Structures are given as structure tokens and as C-alpha cells.
Amino acid sequence: MSVIKSVIDKVKQTDPGQNEFHQAVTEVLESLEPTTKRHPEFVKNGIYERIVEPERAIIFRVPWVDDKNRVVVNRGFRVQFNNAIGPFKGGIRFHASVNLSIIKFLGFEQIFKNSLTTLPMGGGKGGSDFDPKGKSDCEIMRFCQAFMRELFRHIGPETDVPAGDIGVGAREIGYMYGYYKKLKNEHTGVLTGKALEYGGSLIRPEATGYGTVYFAAEMLATRGIDFKNKCVAVSGSGNVAQFAIEKVNQMGGKVISVCDSNATVIDEKGIDSDKCCYIMELKNVNRGRISEYADKYKTVCFEGKNVWDVIREQGIKVDIALPCATQNEIDADNATALAKNGCICVAEGANMPSTPEAVKIFQDNNILYGPGKAANAGGVATSGLEMSQNSMKMSWTREEVDNRLLIIMKSIHNSCLNAAEAYGRKGDYVTGANIAGFVKIAKAMLAYGVV
Image 1: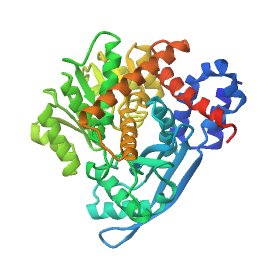
Image 2 (image 1 turned 30 degrees about the horizontal axis):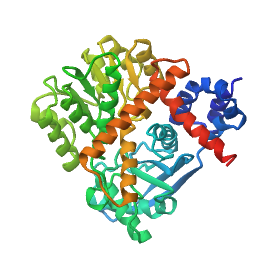
Image 3 (image 1 turned 90 degrees about the vertical axis):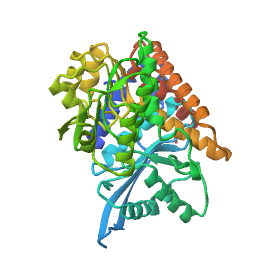
């Protein structure tokens, strides 16, 4: 039995029921098979066994009081996975679906994503099964403060630097950072995604969406094409989707879709800059539902369906797909429909939004496929740039940060292609991203000895 298969089997045996984590481990480790022959020192020193075990997984109680003066109890998580190349770094997710498996899968993926950025950041992730939808600002503030009352013990600017994720935006980061500052009596860059007024970075809100489009543009360029006049499907309607739409518009493409957990909207005329601004206000300020977009612009709304189901069922032709919502949103049937309807490129703005079966269909149909750990690394890359600015007690201009982001995304793209070719899988971005991210971490782990 190969060492890779042995490690995968052990993970499944040791962590039963953690399906998302199993999926992430299997996807990464299977693509690392070529490294076992080229680097026998990794096998000898148990690197593969060690990298799938988090340094620590913290689970804690989060009691808080709602507006009706009722005590509510949620569960909090922080999985500090690997800090071989820098302090743990990864977002905090507030969503009803959050459990240990999801946080472990996200933290595991974060190790390799952060390595690809070339910045000194390890991998971690956190969150809670708290659902911010329908909660008042005061309830969200009380929850964030309760969450930070425990989390603050485990984080720090040189230890673990969380950021936002699904359900955690500028409002939530502000509440958590304010309470951390109160508890610790210090003003340090312990969270990223902060507002500009207290240490945030320009371009940080835009970074994941912009970076995904930058990465897609690099992939398209390998075939001599670009976004101009291309029909683009985007899923989600949060931060990543909003700025992916904005950047696609700037590059001359036309986005026709947007969705939230309740509905999908298809706008064949295209979601132009004015409509994109409306979505930002609807979601970020009014906390509304995407069906309100359909009411305002008289477009088609599909209740209870995601973008990819609608595209499949309606036979909608798209050139480029940017899944920016959540894990496993594109299944095999949806991938088949995208391939049949002429899709040439898929770049993942979300974490693991395509099932393994969907990924195989993309690759078998010669569709350019950028996995999330590469395509959406712009967010954490700019978080790293925010950390640098905080350390130097200074701030860079919008143009400086955007240019650094573009350079990083080009570098990640090149690293993926170079690693894929070096290990005999030319053009395979999945293998390239995993190997490029892994080898750097593995060599650092070797240098430290068995710790």
C-alpha cells in the first residue's frame, strides 16, 4: 500500500463522519503521489502523516443573550493546522452549517493556499454555528464579544491572525477587534479585514473577488483569449461575488447570474456597474434577499435553486464560471451541463465549490480549471499585506496594494503551471497548486525536526 493511500485511510478511520475533511485530504494527497518518489525524505520523516493532523483544534462554548433577553448557546471553533512557514492564518465563518469537519477542511486547504502566496503565513480556520441572518446589530455585537471572550486566549499577531469568511464581514471584524483590544489592552494587527480607520488595508474587501478574476485572466491568456464579450456566471452575492462581478465588468465581460441561499437571479442583460452597486447596498447595508434584485430590475428569479442548477435546467450558455458561494455547489450534473453549454474556464472564488466528480469532468473536457486554493488566494494574500502594513505602522495606496495583488496572483498561476510540468502533469492546475504549496511547507517541517 502506498504511503498516500495509507494516510488517507487512517484519516477516514481516525475522524469518522468528517466528510468535508476527508474530501479535502483525499483531493490534496492523491495529487501529491509524485512527490513521494522524488522526495523520499518526506516519507522517511512522516511529513504526509503529520500534515493532515492539526497542531490543535479548539472547541468552546459561546453563550450570549438575544434581544428578548434569552440565553443562547452556540459552539465556537478554531483549528490551528500548520504554522511551519508563519503564524496560523485563516478566516472565521459564522453559519448554521459550521462543524468541526468543515473547519478542518477549510484549515487544511488554507495551509497550501497561504504557502502559494509566497507570504509567511501558516494555515488555520475558525468559526461558529451562529447564523447572523435575521439578527439585529446588537445581537451580532453581543455574540461577537462572547466569541472573542474565549478566542482571544489562542490568537495574537505572531501566533494566529484570523480574518473574515462567510457571515463575517467588516461589521463582525469590528466588533471582535474592539473586544480583543479591550481584553488585551493593546492595539495590534491580530485580525485582518479591519476597516481603514483602525488598521485595515485598501483593496482588502475587493481582494478575493479581484484575485479570482485575475487568476482566471491568466488561465485564459494561456489560450490567447480574455474576458472581453464573454458571458460569465457568478454564484453567491456576498463580498467575493460582488467584487468578482465588478472586476469582470472592468475587463469587458458580462455577468448574468447572482444568488443567495434563498434564490438565484438570471439577468440576461448583464449585471452592470449600477446593478452591482445595488447588490452591494442590498447585501452589505440593507441585509436583504437577492429576490429583491429581481423585483427591482424585472428579471427572472428561481426560488430555492442555486446558479448551477438553474444553468443546467434552463440550458443557459456561459463561457466562464466563477463559483463564489460555498463548498460542493457544483456537482457532476452541473459540471456536465457547463461543459455541454460551451464553458471554457472555471475559477473558484469559494473554497472547494466543485465536487471531485465535477473537477474530473472539467479536466476531461479540457476546461481551464483553477482550484480555490490558487484562484481565491487573493483574499488571504491581501490579508498578509495588511499584516505587513500593521507591522510597519504604515499604509499603502490603493494602487500599490492592487498592483501587489496582481503580481501575487500572476506568481501563483506561474507556480501552479511550473510545478505541474515539473512533476509530469503539464497544464494540471490542481496538481500544480497542491505540489507547489506542499513542497515549501514540507521542507520547512523537515528543517525543524520532529515537532
